[in-house]
Image (cartoon, rainbow over the protein chains, first blue to last red):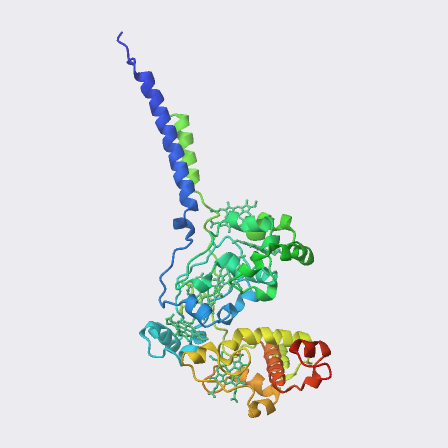
Length: 222
Length: 178
């Protein structure tokens, strides 16, 4: 009977297994990389909006506090996007004829809300709550980045579970005085770490924050 | 089919299960297919009275006692809601008027210094001329806090050195006798 396998078959089989292994590893690495890439986490990708609203102009330029527009942030789970009449508080008088704002005026006249494309969002199976973070003094910039330097809004942090957990395991270094949560520039604070070295730890004690409980699944998944 | 292949197929199919990933839930201000106007947030039927309405009415009609906490709260709320136009000192030279919004009056005008605190609460509640109402953004109790803070701003222009504490006077560089 003739030989079924040639002499090189063994080598080819080994090569095949090696290639399969490399492909599997490659796919895994690609999937892992993709999941962490900004393409999936949306970090730094500006979204087009129906009205090109600029935080840079309104927050940095005009010095308007976040809570002027995001009124729910201290008291409820959601920060809330401003109603059209909040824009019209000023835009009934400034930039009244600007084509950029035509949609705002139209929305105001017709009573249909503007439809913003959401930037900062976690999936529906996650329960997030602004008021607890804000009243404990986690500043907006910690999670939303330098919004005041964004001409169009982009996500600043990957809203992945590991990101939430990395802070929940040890929130102390992230805490600031609650009355200054909307402050964007903390370089003063960070320049002299010695001066505030105990602040976070003391606050964790004062508020009774228990990191063990903060990392339990049912804190965020209910 | 051999069992290892079957196992592989089942595993591959399992990977498609994502019960956790799809738990749709309505959040505030999201679109909804349920209602004719397409909004999750429905306006309450006409004639509805909020449960806390009596409390809010009471907060609006009764002026709270002056306290340091009230002033502090007022300072914060004033900075959030009023400073863009009325500026931190109450002169009306905010950043928004600088970009073409009508100039608000200074809180240090004689007319406004003489106005009762309730007048400021009313302006916040109902608006005034081109200034919109802030009733939906500033809670009744906070309106009194802002009014109290405006009073403090006004006093700061008219206080005599004798009313200050020794420490404040020293900080200002005046002599001890005042």
